[in-house]
Amino acid sequence: MKKVHPDATDALAGLLRDGMTVMCGGFGLCGIPDALIEAVRASGVKGLTVVSNNAGIDGVGLGKLLETRQVARMISSYVGENREFARQFLAGELEIEFNPQGTLAERIRAGGAGVPAFFTKTGVGTKVAEGKEVREFDGEQYVMERSLFADLAIVHAHTGDTEGNLRYRKTARNFNPMMATAARVTVAEVENLVAPGTIDADDIHTPGIFIKRIVHVPAGEKRIEQRTVRKRAEAAPAGAGGGPV
Amino acid sequence: MAWTRDEMAARAARELQDGFYVNLGIGIPTLVSNFIPEGMSVQLQSENGMLGMGPFPYEGEEDADLINAGKQTITALPTTSYFSSADSFGMIRGGHINLSILGAMQVAENGDLANWMIPGKMVKGMGGAMDLVAGVKRVVVVMEHVAKNKDGSESAKLLKACDLPLTGTRVVDMVITDLGVFTIDKRGEGGMRLIELAEGVTEADIRARTEADYTVALA
Image (tube, rainbow over all chains, first blue to last red; front, side, top):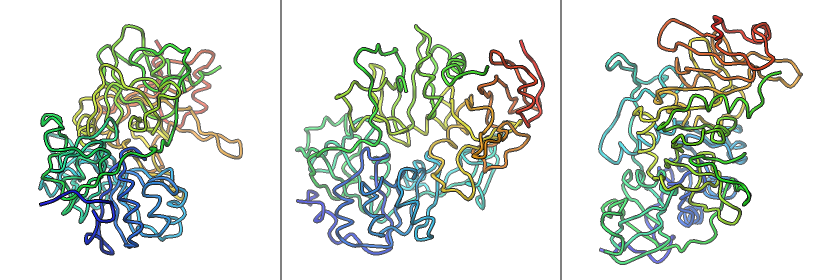
């Protein structure tokens, strides 16, 4: 059994078909499997349902698949930064199902864990709960949400070993670990490919059982959506986030 | 006359307590981080998977793998931890976050909140807002008191009932605007109370710009 593939196209060979459901890791442009997205684009597969928190930006990340009209439907929580997305949506060419971000994360986690549905208080009394079962537990109202399981998941990790064990870096983790568990086949692109034992077993975020194929894609220049900095002279307030805006 | 954005943020910072874990929304709520009192330990949660959010990086030290929920580059602190989106929203939905400070389009006198969608306009999505207001123990809204329309007219944002699609029902505990501060009894029948006026603002000023019913309980 050999999980390592020489390039992204090879890693997706035989897995793509029109109309399939694909989960794609990342938050904004952080931790997205860019080389695998590019390979999906190059394959020409179309009519995809894509499960992803965001939809990339114009020409970057999933924005590439929107440009080529390969996506028929998105399941996302926020798609604000993409003009082409807005155009296709308003023209009725693209369907969107908005999920609250935590509900989306939990639907994927549940799908990977063999849990078909769960109850959450998120969205009770809003559009999100329309047409769904609402049940009372301990005096509070909860809405039933179904789990998600995809034909294919594509994820990005900082380091992976040849057994498929993965370790993510900083906030590039986001949706990648749950998506890795919630598809018939998961393909991981890793910035660093190492021998088994190199990642301390205590530091493995995604055990290799979830990863069927892996491809080494050394990190190029990563895109930053909102570059925010502070001046050197400013003292950093302890515990403060954001800094002066 | 009326509070500035910074003064509104400073007022919101008075709701912080030592040891709190807090989620700040985009816009004025983000400014609250500049007013955390010295010596107070407050850990900021970013729902994309980080607890203990630091300030913006120095120029040249930006890390594409380290961003906040607004997709801005940020830094880590010695207290920082990273986790998945599922763990992040477990924290939020599970009631482990003490305080959520966020913006709003409309708030109703019973605590209903609308801040994600205007019918007929392009909908960007709710992101984590619905999870935050449903799961976090205490929700403070910071917003302009009225909406300014393109024709120069003003529309009330504090309403008897929201007419925009809701983000959550009976979720708001406090509203801080440029004109004053209101509390909302979101679980009981106590309704909305005006508890503070911004400097130079009168109760009559607020009455004229507020559709919601409220009682006056100024200290």
